Length: 130
Image (cartoon, rainbow, N blue to C red; front, top):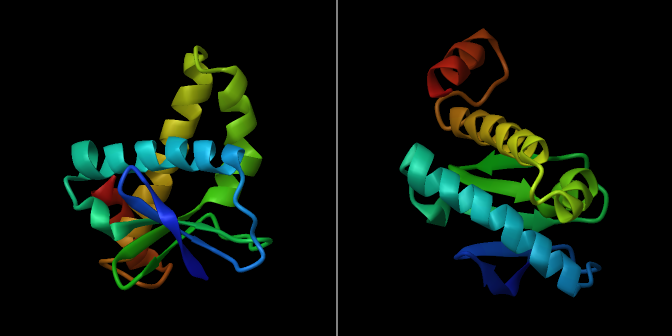
């Protein structure tokens, strides 16, 4: 993956070599980055520097944690949430769904800073993060 030159709310985007950046992708990247940076700053009180976006072609990953760096898949956001958000900025239900989903994903990835495996200890740590 290569780092795209644009930062989204101070969050870098890494893309597969075959990904062509579009204006829609940039807009959606800014939306996701705003949410994630708000979580980092206002909820978890961690540096935004640990947050990264990535845009691949076909992986099933929503997010992952590498040595404390959190990576969130922009393509997943595009496919699952972006269209609903485009037509529903006034729809609190849609916004709540997106916030709740990414809150849990963020908690999950932060838990990997404590426990790498998905075992019983991970579940206990995950509960404490939430």
